Amino acid sequence: MQDSDDDGLRRREANCVPLAPLGFLERAAKIYPDKVAVVHDDRRITYAELYRRCKRLASALSQIRMPVLNVFATGDVIIPVSCSQGMEAKFGTDDDSELSVPGGHIGTFVGGKAQKVLAPSIAKWLRERNQLPSGARSFKLARSRAP
Image (cartoon, rainbow, N blue to C red):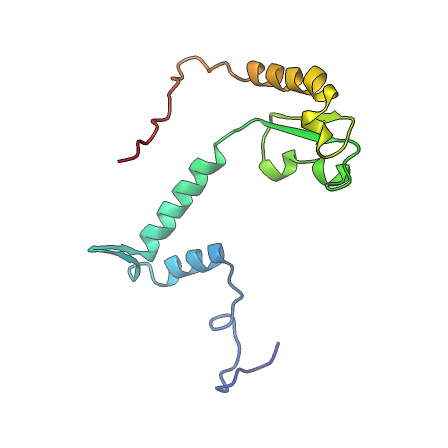
C-alpha cells in the first residue's frame, strides 16, 4: 500500500479502510446515521435505519433451520466425492444427512439401483422430517394464475 494517493492525501484509518459490504454499512451507520441511504419513490431510509433492518433480517435468516440431504454417487467423475461431502458446514444446519450410492453421474437416479435403494431412502428421509412441531401450522403456496 502506498503512503499517499494521487492527490497527496496521507493514508490513515479515517480515509483508507478496506470495506466489505457489511463493514461499509456498519461504518456508514456510525458515521452518517441520519444521512439518506436508500430512496424509493417518496420513501427515504437513513443509514442507521438500513443497518437496523439489515441486522434484523440477518438475525431472522440465521434462525432458519433446514434439513439437508446430500445425495452423491461414489463413482461420479464429474463431481468428485470429496467435493460433495461436508455440505453441512456450508449450510449451517444441525440436521444433515449424506446418502452415497454406487454408480456414476447419470446412473445415480435412473439406474436400477436408484429405483431399489435411492428412491425409498429419500422417501424415508422426507417422511421423517415431514412432522410439524406442536403448534406449527401447515400452509400451501398459492399458485399464480395467468391473466
